[in-house]
Amino acid sequence: MSDNVSKIVNAFMKLSDSEKRKVIEVVVKLQRATGALIERQIIKSYGLESMENATTINFAPVPGGCPTCGK
Image (cartoon, rainbow, N blue to C red; front, side, top):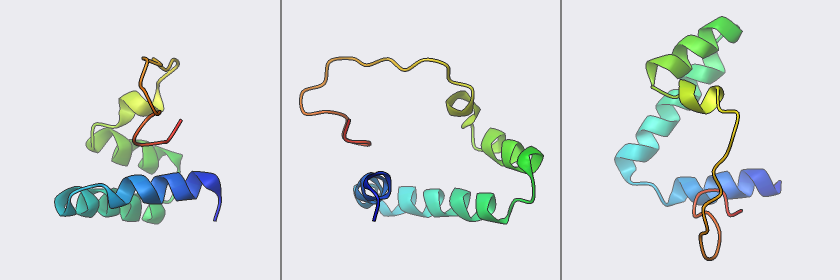
């Protein structure tokens, strides 16, 4: 398993059951998407477009690293 996959699985395991269901719902829809336009529509429908269009990352001081990605 790659380091990226390991970090995602670790973050997923920390979610509540309802959050896990929502993540699975989004991933399944993205897997079934048949093109970039449909993927963008799915991302927008879940309010995730800000992540897609991000051009900067704010690295605030966090002891021990990010709990989501581990960086």
